[in-house]
Structure formats: C-alpha cells, structure tokens
Image (tube, rainbow, N blue to C red; front, side, top):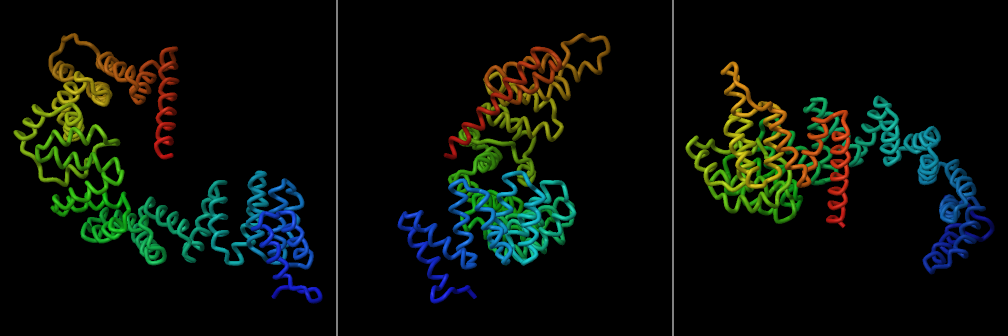
Length: 410
C-alpha cells in the first residue's frame, strides 16, 4: 500500500511525473518524482534515481536506489548491482543480486549465477541456475541442460529440456531436445522436435530435420528442407544439399552450391546416405569440378583412402582452389605424399621431405589470403622472423573476415 501525506496520493504524484517525462519535460518529471520519493514511494525513488543517473549524479542515484532497496524493492537491487558491476565492485553486486534472488526474483537468480560463474565459483552458480530454471527462466534452463549434456547426464538433461519446451516453446529447446534424442539413436523422436521447430520457422532446425530425414531414408523430403534452410540463409545447408547432389551425380549444381557454402563437410550426413560403389566414386572423381573434388577428398581421407584424397586435393589445388591447397598441405604434413608412402617400402630412395611439399601448398594458399594456411606457415617457421610475419598476417586476415561478417549482418 502506498504511503500518503494529507490528501496527496503518491501514486498520482508519480503519474504526474510520468506524464511530464512523456511530454519531454524531464525537469518537471524530476520534481514530481522527488516529491513522491520524499513521501516514501519506491517507484518515485527508482524513477528519480534513473534521472539522476542519466545526468551523471551517480552518488545521489545510488542513495535513492538504496532507499528503495531497503524497502524490499528488487528493481532497485538490480540497479545497485548493475552500478556495482560497472565499477568492478563484484562483492557489492553479488550482495544485491542475492538480496533480490532470496526474494524470489528470477532474473536476479540468473544474474547471480552468471556473476558467480564469471568469478570461477561453479558450485554456487550451478545451484542458482537450478533455482532459476525451476522458476522457468529460459537462460537458466539453457545453461543447466547444456551443462548436463556436456557431463553426459543425458537423462536429467532430457527432463530439463522437456520442461523448457513446455515452459517456453522456444525453438532452441526443441532443437536441443531433438539433438539429444538423435544422439541416443532415437531418430524418430528427434524428427518430432526438429519438425516442430522447423515448421515454426527456425532455420537451424530445418537443416537438422534434413539430416534426420536422411538417416530415416527419406532423402527427397530431406532435400526439400535443405533447400528451405539454404533459401533462408543457413550456409551449412548449402553444403548439406550439395552432398546429396554429389551422391546422385548432379555435380554441376553441387559445384554452384559449394561455391556459396561455408563450413566443413558433414561427414555424418554422408555416412547416412546409401554407400556408393567404388566405380561410382571413381566416375565422380573423374568428372568433378574443383569444389566437388574438395568434398570427395575430405570424404576419401576420412575413409583412410589417402591416395584418393591426395589425388582429389591435388587436382583441385592445381585448378586454383585455395581450400584444396590447404587440405593438400595438411595431408602431406600428417601422412606424406603417395610417393613418400610408397618409398617407405623402398629403402634408399631420396625424395623431397613432406614438410617441404606441404610448405609449397600452404604458401600458395596463404598468398591468396587463406588464413589457416598462414597459421600453418607460421607454425612451420616458428621462432623465425618469417614465422612471426605469417602469424601477424593470419591474425589480420581473421580480423578482416570478422569485420566483413559483421558488416553483412548489419
């Protein structure tokens, strides 16, 4: 119940201040808020404190927030915690978050857990995340379920995810639950949750649903969802779709998609597709353009077909594909070339060391702007001026890529 002085209702006084603020008369609003605050009204205290804070009078703002907090107002407690964090007074911030959390404030529970986590107190933070999650806080639900999955406690993670789905209906939780079930081999269950999220418009879920449908043998439907995800801007769906097309020998469209795609090849998706006969793989390799060759090379390497992988990477690299140059360099670094592998069975043979062969391809890719190749060159020349030069160039290239990505989002 609001405190009154004489006939003046402090709620009305606050209302006059709000009306003045909406009309652009902040000075008048401050007068009304101060009148309400002086009468003990917590809304008046908070609003007055906000005005004083905006004008740089932080000491006075803190005093009004503190008076409201002493009356049990959790909004003021959040404000005091925020100001304390800005000044790096973490003990004070923790104190006010605890005060609000102990009063059942859901946001304060999560904020307190975040603060404890940032200071390395993982035991305490887990308990507060759980309390916030029990009250339905989406962020806390996400943290708890993710931690449980990371620890392998999938049964409990599933219980929390189901609670999160019921409480929020957020696509994030639908996808997480689908992924958990898919990891257990419950592909049909995974389809249910991915489909709900996909049909709600979640782009990541569309791609996930496509992968689940491939595992269920419904490749045509999977293609539809990959195309929807790709059209909605999910770059990885382009590569997923390209794999389907490569698999059925439609390499021209696959090549166009891979030119636009980003990220690694989805090995699990390829494994879920019916296996190709060796003759079909050979035919694909002979007719493929360089981006598809990179895909085939990655998949051949995963099958431990090192000669096939090298052959694909080398053809694409010689055609000018920088990703292939880098992949070829990595293959030569880890496993040597076909020549060196054969020479291992021929004592006395003298061939160029793998590191020299790898460096040639790393350098060609790096000179065309491939940042991973730059890092590889810096590792090969570690401790030297050249190594330092390539390291700096790689960092600059990564920063440039990040700026471009942010510009595209804007």
